[in-house]
Image 1 (tube, rainbow, N blue to C red):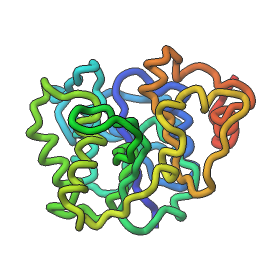
Image 2: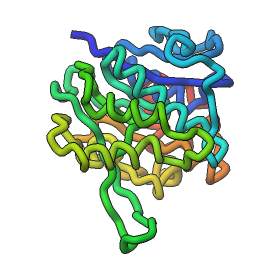
Image 3: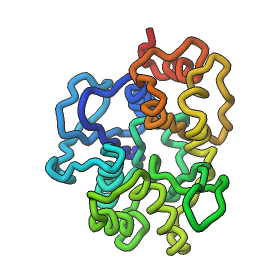
Image 4: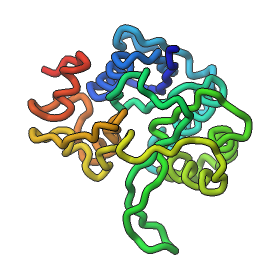
Length: 252
C-alpha cells in the first residue's frame, strides 16, 4: 500500500536543501503532495501539488513573534492530517528509509532539547517535535485532533516559536497518556541535534547516523540563524553532499 506524504511550501521555489528533502521522499516510495498557495513549476518529477487554500484561506497566513510562518504551518498540518491522514514531513526533513519500512502504527517523534523555561531547572530533556507525524487513521479526539482544536483557538498575535509545535504536542501527550501513538526516540527522525545544525551536516567528516534513523531533520531554522543559505552547494564529503548524490539532487 502506498503511503501518502504531505508537505507545505510557501513563497519562492524550494532551495537545494528542500529539493533534496523532496527527492528523498519520492525516492523512498511515498506519494508526495505539496500544499502551496503559489504555482511551483520546477518541482522534482513525481510531486503532486495541491491548493493550500483548500485547507486554509491565504488570508489566514500569519507570522509568529520571530516573523516566521512556522506556527502557521503547525496549524496547517493538523488540519491536513485530521482530514486526509498519512505522513507529514517538513520540507527540511530527508527520508532515509523506504516507505515500506515505516512502522505500521501511528507515531510521533521526539528530539533532544535544552530546557530553559522558568520554574524548572535548566538542562537537557526530550520533547516531541511535529516535523514528522504519522497519522494514517484520523480519529476525533486523538492527539492531532486535540492539537488542531488548540491551534485554531490560540491567539495568533501572541504565538512564540514552538508553541503550536513541540510545546503543544508534548503537553497533550502528557495530559493524555492513553493517546495510542508510538513515541519514537530522537534517533528515529532527529538524529542530529538542532544545536549541531547545519555544521554537522556540512563538514567534510560527517557524523554517522544510527542505523534505525528513518529520517534526518536538517533544522532549516538553524541555517537561517547561522546566515547559511539552504541553496548553497553542499561541501564535498559532507553528509548532505552524500545524500544529494544518493537521491539525485544536483550539487555543483
